[in-house]
Length: 181
Length: 307
Image 1 (cartoon, rainbow over the protein chains, first blue to last red):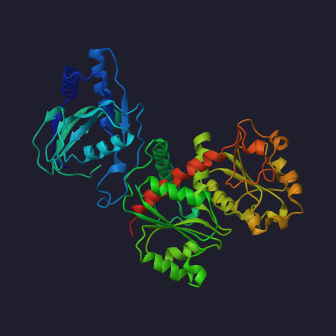
Image 2: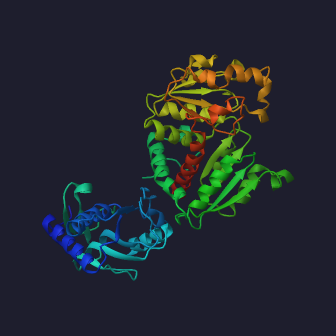
Image 3: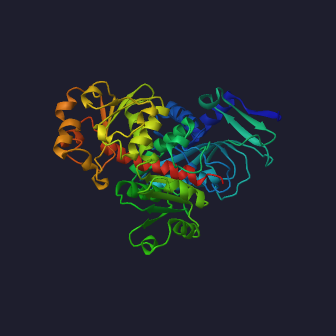
C-alpha cells in the first residue's frame, strides 16, 4: 500500500471552487458555458456551475467531453481506451467556453480537449479551470482558474475523489504510480 | 478493456463481454456522425483495405464511411479489374496486399470460409464482411444494436427470422448471436429454403408465417437472393409474396410494438410490401445508420489489438 497524504478536504474543495466562481464573475465571464472533461471534470463542472448560479442566479450550461478519440498516445498504451459519450448540448460557435478538469499535469489532455472542441465549431474563447495544478507540463498550456497549486514529484499521483465517481469528495497525494486510470 | 479476439470472422468467437464492449463503443461513437464536421483523428495514419470480391453497396460504403470518420485511409479493392481476374491466386493477392502494411483487412467473398483462410495467411486483423452462405457478423452486430436501442433488452425477446434462410449468411450470424444474448429465435419460410440440420441451433421452424408473427417482438425479413438463383426454390415470386411476404394483411396479427428489420437490399413487393418497409414499425434505415457506428467501433477496437 503506497503512502498517501490528504491535500484537500471537501470543505477546502468547495472553498476553492467558490473562489474560482468569484474570479470567473470578476473577469466578466458569467455568460460562458462550461465543458467538463471526462471523467472527473464533469462533476467538477457541475459543481462550479452550482457555485456560479449562487452568485448570478443563473445556471450556466454544462457540456461533457470525452477526449479519448483525440489522444496522442494510442500507440503507447496497452489497450484501447474505452470510448465514452461526448455531449455538447449547445453551439460552440462564438461561445465563451471554460474547460474544466480535475488535475493539470502534462497538458496533453487539454491539448486533446482543445482539438475536440474546435471540431464542434469556433469558440469565441476557451479558458481552463482545474482543481489542482501539479506541475510537470510537457506542452505550453496554463490554467486561468486553479483551486490548488502544488509542487509534486513526477512519480507521485494526485487523486481527486468526487462523490459522483468515488463516493466522497477529497484530494489525495499518493506516493507511487498505482495502476493509471 | 479490449476484445478477446483479433479478427471478426464469426459471431461464434465473440463473448458476451465482447458484444457489450462493441455496442457500448458504437453507441458512444454515434454522436460523431451527427456533427457538422464528421471526423475524429483517432485512427489517423491507419490503412484499411476493403476487399470486396462480391458486389456490395451498403456494407462497402458503410465500412468506408466508418473508416473515414475515424480518419483512417480506406482503400477499395474489387475482384473485377484486379489481379485476381488475371489469374493470381487469392493467397498471393493477400500476401501482396499484406506487403503494403495495412492495419485491417475487410473481406467479402462469395465463398464461405475465405476470411478465415486469409486471417491465417496475413498478419493483420481481418473482418468478415460476408462470406458466401456462411456468416455476416457485422450485420448481426448492427441488428443487435438496432433491437437493443428500441427494445432496451435482448434476453427474453422473441425474434422471428422469415424467408430465405438457406442462402442467408445474415440469418446464420443472427441466429447464433441472438441466441447467445438470450433471445428466443424462430425461423419461418418455404420448406425448400430451410437448410437441413438448422434445428440443431435450437430454433423452432415454421412453414406458415402466420404461426410465428403473433408472438414476435422483432420480425427480421430476409431478401430473396435472386443472384444465387433463389427463385428456383419456389414456383413464382407472386406465390412467394402471397405466402411468405410481410404485408398489411399479415401485419394485422402482429404485436402492436413489433419492430421490423431487413438487411437490404429490399425486394419491394416480394418479401415485404412497400407500405410495411416504409411504415411505422420498420427500422430498416436505422439499421443502416447503426451499421456505420458498429463498424467504427470494430475498426477502433481492432486497431488496438495486440498480436
